[in-house]
Image (cartoon, rainbow, N blue to C red):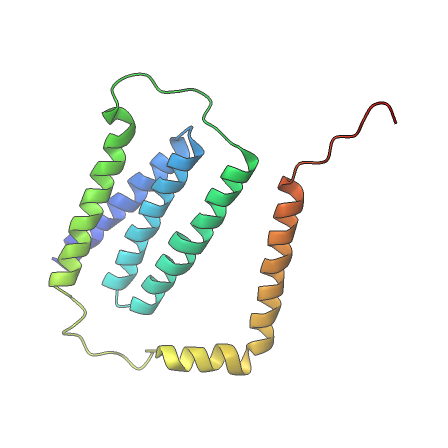
Length: 169
């Protein structure tokens, strides 16, 4: 059952990523990418890495996608053309992928394949990870936080509109 679920999630992830690449509307592309990230997070959970799955959802599907949407809205990117045809051509793939992803999520919730396995010696508890990040590697975490701050300031400076100068002066 776990291997079948893994292949279904892999198919969902690949299809969502392919749809992300081929969409003309940038907002739709980001939504498909979020679906792909959720499928990848479920695959990590299925492989016995719940902490990595949580990071995938929090960091990639949450924070980075919000940043992408912010940049898309800030730059005013719009689709090149409106697709013709019925409305289900635009929303059908997203509804199909999202519903199959929800079914896989419910299967994982009700039948946890990792609940019966013994955790190996390579397991890193979240408390140990926090102690390592904010203890031994505190300087590196602060440097990365400053890099993210500089990147957000740079994105603001690149995206802002310049004041219009008068031709008379």
